[in-house]
Image 1: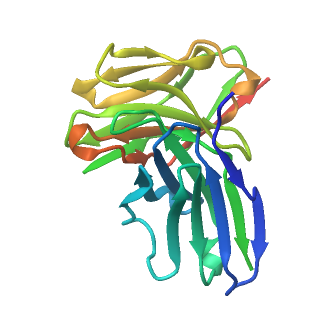
Image 2 (image 1 turned 90 degrees about the vertical axis):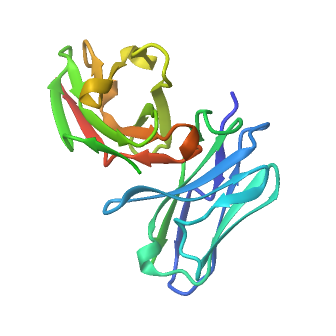
Length: 114
Length: 115
């Protein structure tokens, strides 16, 4: 049963610390998305990649957030330095191909910044 | 630009009664529309999707939705609610070929199912 995996599932850290979240897309999927979910803003797209190249990161605060795909099986989202307002659930999703494919979501990383 | 409006933030039904979760959309392109469900502390699961084929779409767990272009609606229904349906439901729009694969999510409808 292929699925998107994310680690860690939960992360509690202190303000100013670096946080790295990891995502393993479904094998063979070439499009990867990062979303953030908060009570106030709902689900927001932060960034997405196709064939490991960033296509759109306009939803991501550039000064502290960075997203990369070191290889086809790993996507990372890094926050440095973290702030309390970054507390949210971060979801990764992957899709098989281009513009019309269904996105499959991982279980999320719940981040709490104290 | 594209957007979705979920008209009810909370819906409460009794087990065995019909479910109706309402969604209206706005899109500059021919849209694709989705319903996702999120159970507590879980990721999002695709229930069904409309991509310009049949306007009545059947999904998993007995859910279905009808695309009505004249009303710009994509309401989610189920004839008989089950306790396991209690979750949050998101209506999602994706622009057509001009919008790539970017999804825009509604604010969610929390479905409560009572005995």
